[in-house]
Structure formats: C-alpha cells, structure tokens
Image (cartoon, rainbow, N blue to C red; front, side):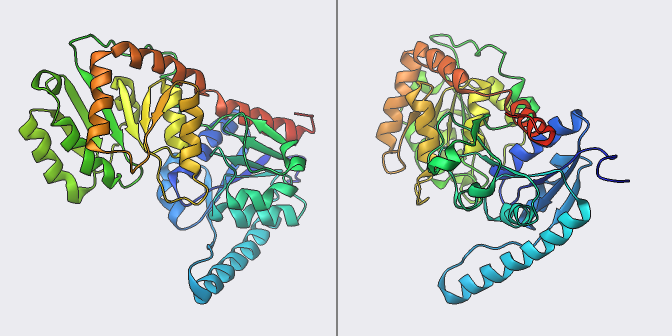
Length: 371
C-alpha cells in the first residue's frame, strides 16, 4: 500500500519520565479517535509506560545524555549517534507523515532523524521554559506547541511558529474540570493531597508531619491527609501523624490520582509540568514546592504561572519550614474561602482540551492548512 493510500501515520517520540510520556499518551488517544495510525518511539526507561498507550506500536531506541567527565560525554554521544542511525532506519521503513517530539533527550533521536530526512516535525514543550532537546530541534520544527501562553527561551524566528495548546492530560483528569469544588465547611474536614513526583519528595516527609502535629487539637481533628511518601520514611511519618491524632493515608505511589484529586481541597506538590497540568485541569488550589536543582528552574517557572493567576502559592524548598507550613495551613483552616477562590483561579489556568488542540494542530499540518 502506498503512502497516499494508507491511513495517515504519526510517530510520537517520548521517553524517560512520566512528564514527557503522559502528554504523548493523551495525544495518542486523540489521534486514534481521528483515524490516524499512531506509533511510539521511546528509550528503555520509557518501556514501563507501555500500558498507557494501549495497542499503539512501540519502538525502543538507544539514547543518551552527556554525562559527567570525558568518558560520560563520549558514552552519551555514542548512544545518541546510534539512536539517530536506528531512528533514520525506522523512519525510512515506517514513512510517517509527521513526527511529534515531547522533549527530553530520549525524544531527540527520532525527531532529529525525521528532520534530517525531510519529514515534518512538531515539538511539544510541557514546561514554561523550553528544554535543551527541544531548543536544539526548534529551528527545523514546523510548529512548537506550548503548555503556557508565553513560552520562554525561544529565538524570535522560532516564536513565530509557537502555538499555545496547553499540556495534554489523561481523560480521567479532564473529566474533573466541570465538577464543582468539594464542599468545605468552616468546621468540616480539610482534605490535603501530597504528591512528590515519581519517588516522593523527601522534604514533604520531613516537614509536613512535624508541622501539622503543631496545630491545635481541634484543627488536627479536621485534617485528612493522603500523602505520597518514600518507603523508607513511611513508618516515621505514620508515627508522627498517629501520635498527633491526624488521619493520614501514606503510600509510596498514588495509583488513583484522579479520585484523590476529586476529593482534595488543596494539593501540596512539586511543580513538574504534568503535575501542574493535572492540578489545574482538576481545578484544585495548590502549594507548589519546586524542585530546586534544575539549572533553568523550570519547576519554579511552571509554578509561578499559576501563582501569578491566583491559583497557587509557591514556597521554595528552603522556605518550606514547619513554621511556614503551619502558618499556611492555619490560614486555610480559618479562611476556607481562600481555597475556594484559588480553586476557581486554578481552573481558569487548566486546559482540559489540550489533547484536542494538539490533535487539531497535527491535522492542520498534515493537511497542509495554515494553523
């Protein structure tokens, strides 16, 4: 069957972390509903997300980042070069109509190979500032889809091709967008959802139990905590919460995030792009504690977008002290309207239709329309 006779084929290139892969999963579902043939290119780390793509064909390619020292850099370059060669072979064989890259070094080989072979490419950037891989690929991309209205780090010529779509999230999360904020009575329960990234942030396990245990007894009795917590810190955190009489459900991994978001009055979390997208799509106010060790401070910039709109509060890790947390939670308990108003501002930042908008962009590019 010739390329003209078959279904339009789109290859999604995403790997490494859930922050890069989950938007690709949401887009894959949208494209399949439009009748496209969808394939997925990833690295070894990305294989663990296979189930989220359903029946989409997966291709695993080598990839690498420049490590520390001369040997680390040489190994990274060699892995990247091998990945590009294998990607070129794959693209020649599969003949996609378009390749979409989701950033991060695992996405680089397939997108670079497509550009070298003259196959149209679109980049999706989840963060508020463009990442290294996407920055290198941007000059030859037909379009750059952004999760925020003003993506930072683009050259002027690239900014012309930037389209604001939002960050696609799973349908179970987008379903929360139209649901009301849960009732929050002056003396009723306050449900706090604590998420710390894929492994659980140590700072939350260290600070939150101690801070919340200092609340007056009537306030402690109102708290319902669901917290992602590393396995090695579970026992100590449970003990502190238990001795304080605080209802707390602690687990190394939260596997029912949509249900927990629906019940939560406020979220305390890192501010990775996917977390921010899910929290805002659900319309939940948040206290964001950005991961402090990224050179470009991408998580801080992600969080600032929502905080500037009134839907979140940003606390640096150094400033996330028991005293500061105690003051923040007491404000929520005493002034529930603060959370109610912030929830609506967070919802205004949400983009539940991001997958559809990105799918529209892809359709326009493949069809040769101006978008």
